[in-house]
Amino acid sequence: MTEKEKRDAGYLYNANYDKELIDEICSCNDLCHEFNSIKPSDRTAQHEILKKIFGQMGKDVYVNTPFWCDYGYNTTVGDYFFANHNCHILDGGKVTFGHHVFIAPNCTFTTAEHALDVEQRNEGMEVALPITVGNNVWIGAGVTVLGGVTIGDNTVIGAGSVVTKDIPSDVIAVGVPCRVLRPITEADINRYPKAPGEKVLDK
Image (cartoon, rainbow, N blue to C red; front, side, top):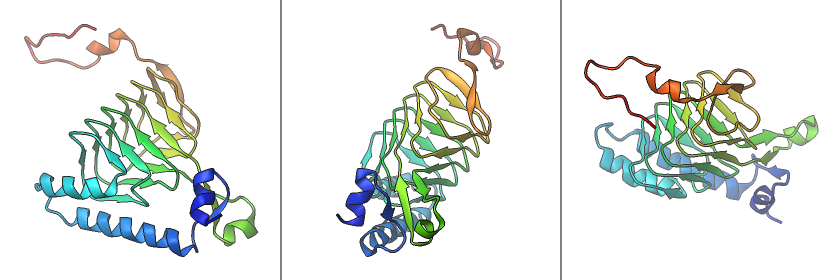
């Protein structure tokens, strides 16, 4: 098996010294560099580069610079996706974002898990574990999501959290490691003040 085939099968693989994988990362990094060099107001040009980076991309996708991704083709984003400044996606494994996902600044999604054995690690061995983010998810500032994690629909991940295990749908989760704080309820519709005369939406 090639190192890429080992990676995709979930086995330990050489992520650091395999020419095929190094070339793929360099190609994606070049596209990210090109994307990051585009004038921020030129969303059309940015969109064209994002289509070359992501394996699959929905409509109304916006990413603020700087943005970095390892392979690109392993990342899928749904409709109405927004990632704020300094988003990093290490997508040796599959990274899947649903629709209406909002990502605050300085967030990292990393599928890479290095070998614990020092000799294996020094040889460049690691595994790639997938990440799945559901629909209508808000990821707060400075969040890190590790490989093997699934975040359910309609969930909010609080700022600064490190998500090491699955988080269910319809909750607010925070902390290091990230844990469920409470469910999201209808009372949250009125959590923030509204302008005078503005209609309150009911579910």
